[in-house]
Amino acid sequence: MSFLNSMLSMAASFSGDQKKQDQASVLSALVQVTNQYPGGLPALFEQFKQGGLETVLKSWMSQHTESIPVQPQQLEHAMGSSLINDLAVKSGLNQQVVVQYLVQLLPLLINTLAKKGIISETTIPEKLDTESIMTAALSLLNRNK
Image (tube, rainbow, N blue to C red):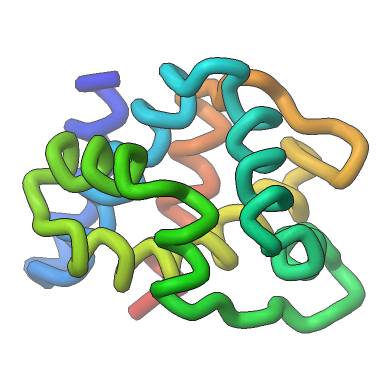
């Protein structure tokens, strides 16, 4: 995944914006951790559902309803401290910063992936390929100014 990290960092660095660079680091870490997660993306989505975020997750995938916001504590509970710590280590940011970015980025990323037909309520790939993530992430970084 170093290629993805390099590409996201390079794309974010063009803006000269530290926030975008940090967001790119979180996105890259998220892809790495998701692709290494036992059971992949479907298992991570199941963890969200078990953490009480099923309705929230469905709203993020929907093209017909507004995304329901998630609070940092809800996200931490659903993802678990171990996963948040892995994201912090891989991104080089502290856990609080990672959670704050995830609260902003996850709804947008999941919605973007759903709009592009990469994920849906019935189709969730185990792993996310680099091209799909690059397309979604670049769109997201450009949109999240």
